[in-house]
Image (tube, rainbow, N blue to C red; front, side):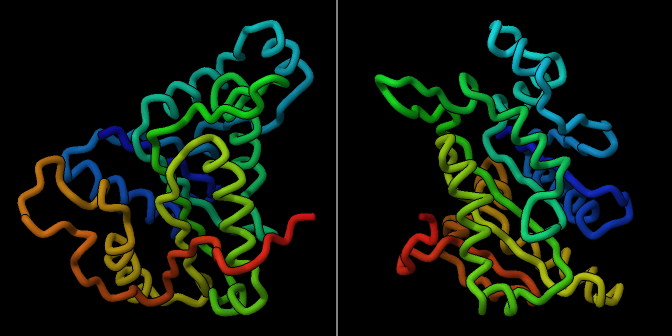
Length: 231
């Protein structure tokens, strides 16, 4: 399995960076091929420019976009790790999505046939860290809204399977011991495809095993009982 991990945090000592390292270790240790894209270290340009549009409309994909598209194309599982800024993706990650998930690559659109997803068969997981508690965001409906806007309305739109939206709250107040425990607990909330070895040794599927909910971690999916807030 090919596992693409995309990091969008400017601080290499951040919890987000530590999460990426932990996930990469677990995934590669289970025999999967891991590709890490640290957008800040790569100095990725998040601006979808007029020149980009010109080249794309001419059928020529800019080199930096083509590079990222190749990583996405090869991936079976994609994990995005980022801090929650103003209830959304950091600008560098939003720009990565804007530039990489282009019409003709992530989906196709035509007046006759409408939208056709082109990233089917892939799983996408979102992991975000934030300063507020998860409870605060759940109480005002923002968790469901963010899972919809950052997950369903982007990745599901392109045909990807939802592998979970994990929110980690109250990060600034964490002690070093709490941070270490969280990194250990996080593997319990990872998709089976990442946790399990390439060759399964246990006869009991991991999805059937009882796993206690790690503290400070929520795996959020859009509520199917609530009406859409879109007009």
